[in-house]
Length: 416
Image 1: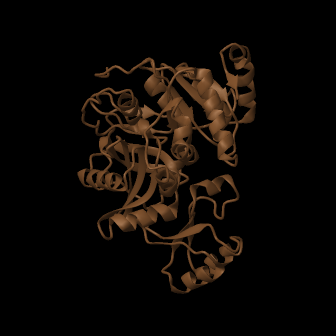
Image 2 (image 1 turned 90 degrees about the vertical axis):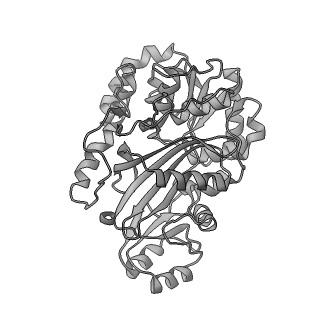
């Protein structure tokens, strides 16, 4: 049992922008706070998302967005939700767009909502590959060598001098909502392939060309933390990623909690130097060739796999933020090493893909000391079946909608 009590007068609201209904992080946050009696609300694409079916959700606000809306419209939509909730509510963004929106419009949202205040320009910079790389260079934090071409000529010059293979990624996190230059992380084997791809990138390529870190010489590590107003990590966790989907470039499919004091110190000092406050989810890659941890991504918000991490006091990053923003003490505890997190719908294909990949994680324990499943929970079973209905095939989804129809008509779902 947790060694603390949360202020149940302050609800939580899951804030998401864009269409990605199968998000286990939002479900995890609803359960984490809801199990301790905190009223939970969520923005959902429709009435039949896993988050909307959780027994711990007080109300779902159906508000389909694309990420292309103007910020004034999104801010006013959030404020309308705040008026409907009717009391100060803690915001929990699940994507970069939501985190940036909240930071850049803190004054407009601050009357109705609670959230950590940070430099309003910082989350957008951290969500940008170029912005993050520049911060890493400034503060001496290792990162994969990166180039940011601004023209076709820049790409031709890079192709003539670079060491291949390289990796191409979209420069800005928000490009996935528009027409992205590349689909996810793309490995490019030589100059000819790069120049051929670049024909579709336009006059101003929105890509970053990054050093390739061979998977057989690398390990993927993750750091999650809650950082207070003084930019100090009040709780910080380290773990190793065993599998992701898509392989080696996507979200965590399976990971373990593993102590890593060196990485914890590196991450904590970087966070403090840049002056960030709030929940963070950092992706690092350990390069065995030079023995350095290199920062790949800095997500200025709750990560989908945050429930991997909990300490002996029952604290995760979401609970830590709620305690801090409501003026309560965050109890100290040690991270539960050996704990495993598995995302059921993507770990099986990931497991098959990794069999011949050459990727190894020698630091991962051979046996888990407890497993947290992303979807299946004995006390909250419906999100699992809702996920299956949407993930497996449309016919199953349709049957589930018919079964749920009467209940959702009277369960208090609101549309924005």
